[in-house]
Length: 454
Ligand SMILES: C[S@@+](CC[C@H](N)C(=O)[O-])C[C@H]1O[C@@H](n2cnc3c(N)ncnc32)[C@H](O)[C@@H]1O
Image (cartoon, rainbow, N blue to C red; front, top):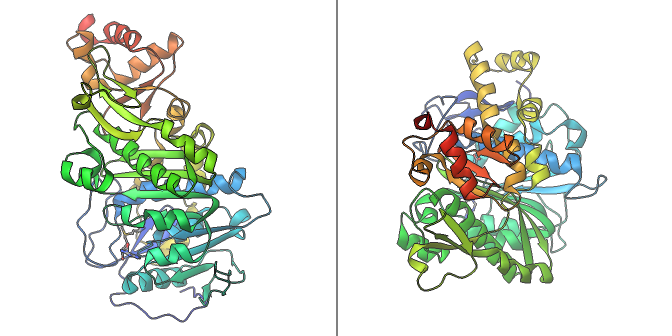
């Protein structure tokens, strides 16, 4: 067994069963069922220390995004370090993946803090990190906090563990990167996260309260997000935009503005990543990017800043109506990149198997497939998602086009592209098309490519 420096308690139930996420070994509680490679939806929780395997793709994208910030220097200068906090880290899988999977060339610049209120989960995180430390030893001095005192935490090979209420942990130091992954809604942590960020920072948020965000629970939506929803084919996109609007308006109150980098509805949760900057001018402008989606007769929807009294019944909002992704950053989230960063080599796998991992050839194949699925369709849709576009659900198009059946999505996309428009599929369980073609043009192409038009 490889050992870390810190002499920490062995948590009850340790070591559990060994599982592999990305190229990081994780220990699951014995009572947790061994995950499948394609987990979907909310998993059955087995108490503190439970790892939700359905969140693996979001953690994978988080590795890619953090790596992108370091590799392309869009957050700090290339000679500067960056303070990163997973405010609700549970058993520490995300922070360990950041440490293990972001390339070693930039690791010395990453200052990673992991916080959770649950001591059991934190002990599990520490034990996992001690048993499987990063290949490269990371040493740096403890940081000062905002109030001038030096962290008393013991550094265990580059990870600073804290056992505090997340709101306190976030406020204590200035972080350039905060990850918020609570059970349910993130709203109770939002203000502290925004205040915990330095003048320029990245905020990544997971929200699993999709009933409130989509509007299928209208009262929770009104109470928590001050919004009104319509549960139709746009409910997922509305949920993403509603969370962004909530973050944007909370940020504006603190003289901060947000720029979305990536925002997705991923099966059973919403995940958004934003660049947050302190700027009164930009914060004042943010209201231009908040509006409503109005369902219409001649087109599925239009965004408006303020619905008329007549439109309100057909409108959902208020929500973010600006771009959802950053073109360059999302454009670099490719299958090639995810395999380069997160897929273990044969040699690494052999070492892991000596450390208790049971991994068959099928596991190798399925886990690579799952890694690719984490970024599927993203780079192709990056350009459109970073500017004005039309979002259409394929299944609703035959009714609009007056044809009997929907064409194959790939065929419709090729048809639009070959006539000079941009079109792509959006990552979602639903067949979603994103395009810059006018709606009438899309309908012409639906008629042309629909099987019933033959
Ligand atoms: C959904 S889990 C986090 C999962 C983790 N990010 C991952 O990827 O495995 C939410 C965590 O928040 C912790 N938590 C809940 N309320 C908290 C609070 N006020 N402060 C700190 N941690 C809290 C729980 O103990 C739990 O571990």
